[in-house]
Amino acid sequence: MPQFPSREWMDQFCTELVAQPDANEAAGVLDGVYRFVIEPSGPLADHHAYDVEIRPDADATVPRVGLLAGDDAQPRLVLTATYERWRQLITGQLDVGMAVMLRRLKVAGDLSPLIGGLSSTKPLMEALGAVDSQWLPE
Image 1 (cartoon, one colour):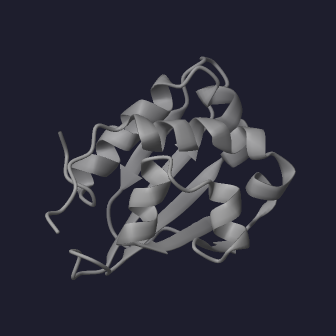
Image 2 (cartoon, one colour):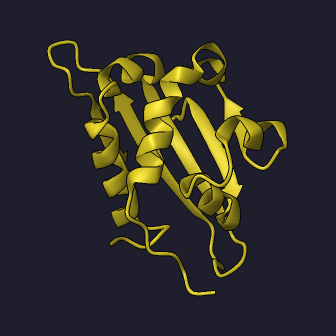
């Protein structure tokens, strides 16, 4: 069980996203790099940022999803929240739409994937919740 946040946790998230039934269709809409930023709060003392590339595969039903290394990525969208807010999103205690409206989740960049097709973000949110997560001790 990977600890959140970590590269292992993000790798597991990528695996869960690929396993979603509508993953390749969603990847067609989400096509790009997404930066997940976890700001310190509660037991988390350090800032974390992870770039996840989501690409549809025209010849298959499985998208290409993976964690990028380095800082050269140009993210299509940056999602920023505190550790506590991410925990609420991952455990289903906070809806992503509500989190954005209440400014609990900061979103910067190309908002068309969120605005144009919230249904396309469903596999993303389901993958977040599917990772069997270990949380930092309080």
